[in-house]
Structures are given as C-alpha cells and as structure tokens.
Image (cartoon, rainbow, N blue to C red; front, side):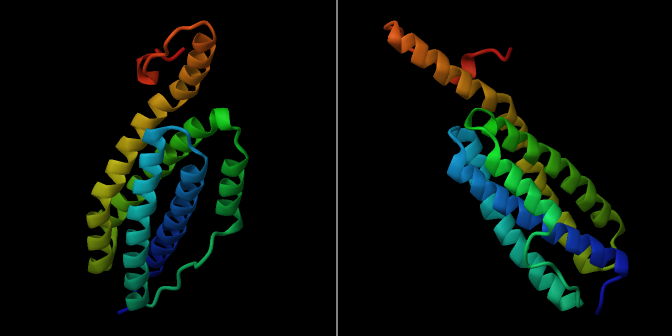
Length: 174
C-alpha cells in the first residue's frame, strides 16, 4: 500500500535528517578530541545507519521516494561543522545533536501518534527510544565538551610549572 502525502513527507524528512546525522557523526569521529563526544558520534553513526536502512526498506514498500544524498541545506550544515575551530568543535557538534534530536523527537512523536499508515506509526514508535537516548547523550556531552579544551590548556600551562592537571569534568563551567 502507498502512504499518504503527509506520511511520505515525514519519511523523506526523516531520511534526510538521518543521513545528516550520520555524516555529522563521521565528521565528529575525525575531529573530536573528547571521548564522550566521540562515543556520542559513534553511537549516532551506528544507530542512524541501521535506522536509515530500515527506513529505506519501509519507504520502498510504501512507494515513497527518499533522498540518497544530502540536500544543499543539510550539506551546508556539514560544511559549517567541518570549518569549526578545533577549540569549539566538540561543543558545536554536541549542541547540533541536542537541537537535531529535539526536533527529531517532536517529529517522531507526531508520527507515532498521527501517521495514517500503521507500519510508519510503528517505525516512529520503535525509533523514539533511540532518539531519546541520543538526546540524553548529546546533552551530557554538551556539558563537558567545552571543559575538555579548557582542561587541556590548564594542564599544559600547569605542566610548564611542574603541576599535574586534573580531570576535565571537575573544572566548573565559567
């Protein structure tokens, strides 16, 4: 059976968002210096790759055309992320994942409640816990991301004076 026009648009948007999150996660894996951010990025790449494959299969069965590459709007987000300074990268990536996942959760909750197609409703319902987990991880990473760079600078400065650095998560945000 084919999906309604509204369901089709939601599937297309979800496919685009999933691809963007995989690509941004790959950038984070290359550029991040923070273990927590890298763990978040790997989890997002793994989970969204798997979810994107399930979504492609579902879309095919419903006769929905989905994008196979990022549109210009989403590619600009990736390009912007690649150009962020090393100092700001972790916090910018974590903030992007917080924002994206809040939007994703809202859209998936809407689909879980209102999709006209039962299979799409089930897909949205089954995907929500992963999105909520990603949001929690991103929020946690966002809190510590800026502190890691600050800690590295303090540790480097302290090392030149013979001091030992402390855990970056113990530095209070300023």
